[in-house]
Length: 330
Image (cartoon, rainbow, N blue to C red; front, side, top):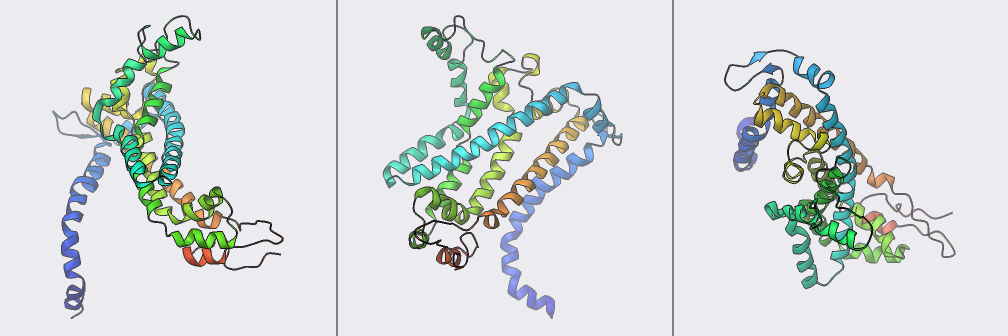
């Protein structure tokens, strides 16, 4: 009877969700489990996998010098491009949201276009060409800043920074649109309540109203930024070649491509992918925990106009304690 009642109440819902669940298991969960299993084997796609235990991980962490270079480059790449692209998406979305609808639509399309334009990033190879005909070299020589062309995409001292710049240019994608949608969905009455309760400028609106109200979009954008910064590889190879000079542009993804797509050492490549997956998962959890504390991290807004004003209406409107729940200032 319980099963029949449960099916009567939830059966249709589960039937509608079943195709998605099946596809998710088939194309996400199963590949991850297979990769983790293969990471403990020696497998070259021609012979059956041979169990080697932790040998791939021991070699990867203690005997593969190129992998350590890739880890250093990836961490540097992620530490710079991840937060910068995140803040860039948020600030641009915030500024564009203040414009009139027509201008907002045009600018949204212009900023979003690079992320959906395929190999359009190859235009940067013309800008940073290593001869005097490259646009950047030409301008810098004309202005007397440099006296000979800089090989931007082959010099180990510059190529990683150029790829970071290109990555930032390409980063206005899904996160940018999510932030725009989040800003559009904020109830205007919250800003009116904020004005009554003491919010006096746009920065205070952003900190005490806008950011807490769009916390789901912030979390989603953070996950996308983390994934993109750790997964940088294909456009780096297109810009600086493979392998890059002195492995200066070598990342974990390009190392994975080397062993997976060129050498076909699938067991070793799976170990690389597993470590990258764990690193991304831990970073995501760290960021999620930080953003989850966004509400509790907001202190009472203290504005002096003869007395301290607190945000009871905003607290009730958002359902969080960012400006307090009607507490009186001392």
